[in-house]
Image (cartoon, rainbow, N blue to C red):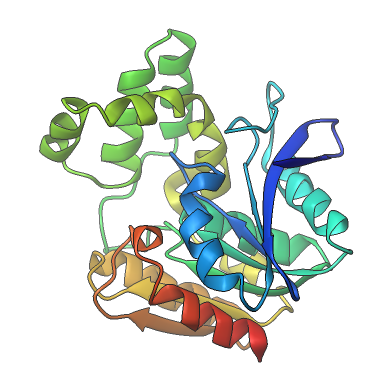
Length: 262
């Protein structure tokens, strides 16, 4: 593990693997850099792969009241460390961070985004605009379990039955341990998880949106709409994959390698 220092002095931890042009992997909610480790192994023969912990997770530090801009600055610090320019892949809310960085920074050479969780009208129930406030209130009361459950049911559209079943497993501790970072993911998504098409129209880096053929239809609809909002944006679907694509990156890896090599 290595670290870089973000603009607000927060240490950001990362692992580096392989050799070649730099590719930075950005994980989503309930994740840290270990979540992207298998994908890093797939890409390492062709790229220097940087898997980093977003603030508040793993080996990275944190700051009270951190903002979306702070998360972009964390990614910018990693880009500076690898020479000032890099290609970026993001998954879920990490996909949104990758896109936001592409809109804000000049050092993002290419961006690939897997299923950013924006909600289009008519595709699924839209979370209330105050979801982030309710999650923060639960966390302030020390109720990490209910905060994680609220994020999953209203934010991620998981069924209450599925979340209740998950809460009964030992795996639930992983979710509660990372629950304090959920406001960062919700801040990235924005109130109501609306697609910021006007802002994404300013992205100049070549951009690929990816969705899974076995994912809920709203993910695929959002990926297509996001690609259409970006000049020259592309969209592709991976057959037989869903939102948990990082658990089986053997199909995702070659798609990313082909895009980043172009």
